[in-house]
Length: 215
Image 1: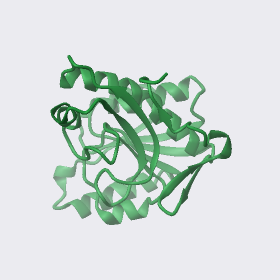
Image 2 (image 1 turned 45 degrees about the vertical axis):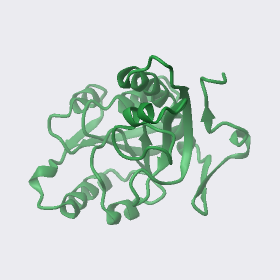
Image 3 (image 1 turned 60 degrees about the vertical axis):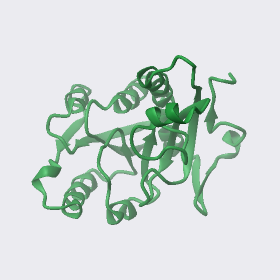
């Protein structure tokens, strides 16, 4: 069984989805630790109640990004993780940190990458008038919100949508596809090949795209 470490900055709703999937027997991993860069992150209490080791490393206590990332990596490596999962971890990570975990650092982003990297994705989608929006799980590279795509989910953008209503529908999909992506990793069904994710043969036919628009 693979070890994972989850990084959060706040409530960690995607962390909650991963814990729920584990508890339901749908995610064959050991969640070794949950680590936050904020001592007041609500998700730390949730993780502790679930019996998971928790730590915080306050980024404000460090002079720069590299110093913080070095301390964070030292803490993470103490749990010997096979995979590090970013679940609302609101820090831009240094290239050295990302390279250290290359191929085993996963993130979820609230857009259909490569569209709308960065912040305020739902607002920007509404302003652009797109008809389809969604979320993406990907392996992390040094380029912000970029990297080999593992799985995506799409939702329709409705005429009456607000930023909040669109975000809420997409969050439902996030909570489905993140546990799925981590499960595939845990079951050795993901392969990185020349910057692209290849799925195991039994998953290759459309499994990496979920569309409530079509289904």
